Each structure stands twice: as C-alpha cells, then as structure tokens.
Length: 133
Image (tube, helix red, strand yellow):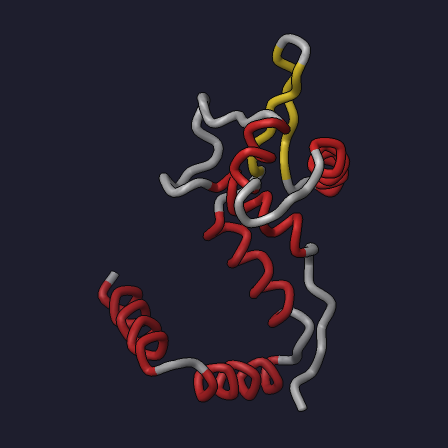
C-alpha cells in the first residue's frame, strides 16, 4: 500500500498555480499579473469556485509565499513566486532531504523503478547532459 503524504498544497491551490504559471513558462514576467476575476474565469470550466473562495485562497497563498500580490487600482494582481520547475525542484529536494544518504539512494532507485520508461529515458538524457557540461 502506498504511503500517504500530505500534499504541499491543496487541489484548488494547485489549480490556481497552474493558471498563474500559464503555458508560456516564466510566471514572473512583468506583465503576467492576474486578478482574482482572471483566475476565476480561467477555472470556470473545470471548477465552479466562487470569486470570494478564489480571493481567500489567493490571499492565503500570498501568506504562504506561493504567490505575490500587487495592488493595481481597486484590484490586486497575483503571480506565482516560483516557476513550475523551481517549485518541483524545491518539493523534490525537501522530500529527499528528509533521508540519510543511503536512504536517499534507495528512495531514488525505488522512484526510478516506478516511473514509465519515457521518464527513465528523460532522466538518462538529463544525466548525460550534466556529465557533458
């Protein structure tokens, strides 16, 4: 039976981050601020979250350091504090940091055994790139 670990953020927080990250990549581009209404509109098809719910979650995410907030007229603009890649690295490093070196090796080996072959190939390619630097 898989070990159940508390997620670093909830489902709605994750959905909001996906909206803030957007398809382009760097969420911290100078013009990449989204309002609560922008986020709610982007989530409208997949979730029926109320404006006030989105606003409350964004405010809590700002307190947690997941997003930054800037006042723009009467509304606040929000953007992710870290890119998707940076957040992934932080989460993985945090989890691996809980293990001793030997345990970390065993955990990595178990992880590699569980991922699909395409992910294993991506790991091999990444390691080859690092070794070529």
